[in-house]
Amino acid sequence: IGEAVLNIFKNFKDYNGKFIPLAGDHLHPQEYTQAIQKVTGKVTKFEPVSLDVWSKFPFPGAAEVAQMCGWFINFQYFGPNADLKVGK
Figure 1 (cartoon, rainbow, N blue to C red):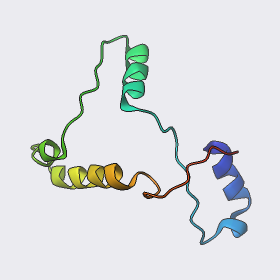
Figure 2 (figure 1 turned 135 degrees about the vertical axis):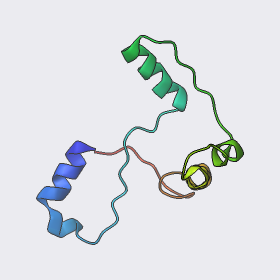
Figure 3 (figure 1 turned 45 degrees about the vertical axis):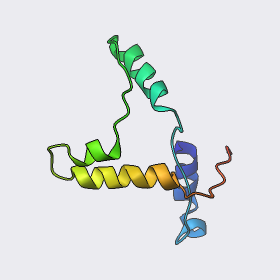
């Protein structure tokens, strides 16, 4: 992402007012778990949590987090019809 963002900053007049779909890694949660385990040396495990469970966690905004996660499940980062091509 860094190279793309640098180009945008250098050429901001070309990009001003435009939607530019950028994202970091598109990894499965298990891949993040493996990375955390590698760095920390601690055994880790990915445990999916249902949106219903998320919405009932005892912290402010839990229901909103569940709603946000539901949006990502339904629409992904750039919408349901996004063409996620790898480019440079």
